[in-house]
Image 1 (tube, rainbow, N blue to C red):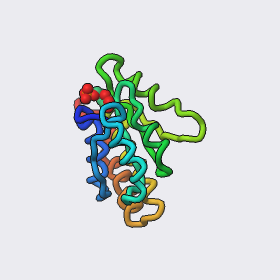
Image 2: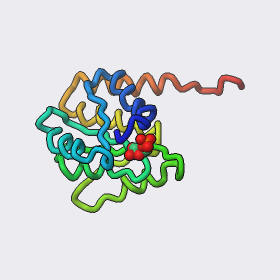
Image 3: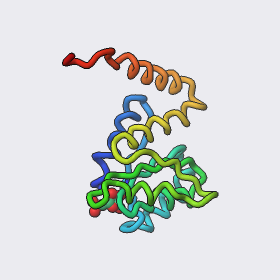
Image 4: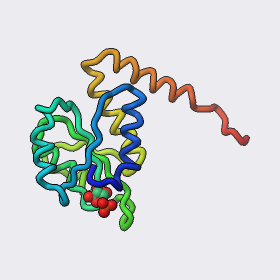
Length: 153
Ligand code: RP5
């Protein structure tokens, strides 16, 4: 993520990865404030053993696209809700990548972070049958948890 201030949002991705038992590292890598850290991370991610990258940032959110430009790993971008423009700036900064450098862009905010975690797990589950079973169980439990009627009816 681009900043400590993104963690309340990006923690939702971490939470779902924890639930599924997927190992991850949460790091702060700012495209603007720590550009050399960004280059080192993105260029070295595959060799470090990462398989999927979730990049969350807000405002002028260049992080996901810049990471994607320096790695062949799949990159999912989470637009973090910004104060000035409610995350629309983040979304537009992430989503309109030029052809050839893909970023799988999620929804703005908490839902996007949760879904980035689920998508990352789904990618990993393609070659991990135990994870695939956990993911399917997670989805089934979610379905089970939806009441047929609202609680105060
Ligand atoms: C972006 O700027 C970060 O991803 C964050 O969403 C936003 C604001 O960062 P802070 O000023 O709160 O550190 O780089």
